[in-house]
Length: 77
Image (cartoon, rainbow, N blue to C red; front, side, top):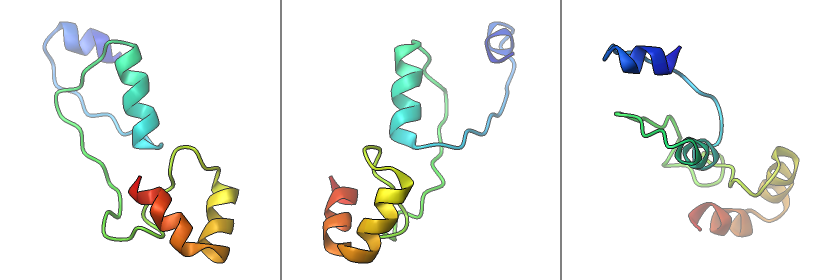
């Protein structure tokens, strides 16, 4: 659907739920460059606003609880 709209020079809005780092990498592997991208991340909250793409949700929750400073360092990397 998206490519057909693009071929006809039509506008379309698509919402994707996922880790932006992973989503953007996947788009690049498919040679797709969107015109506009927004990221609805809580950028002000390093402890709860991000889950680094190399952590599972379970591991992130454990690190947040038991090693918050380590988690924040991961979020900044």
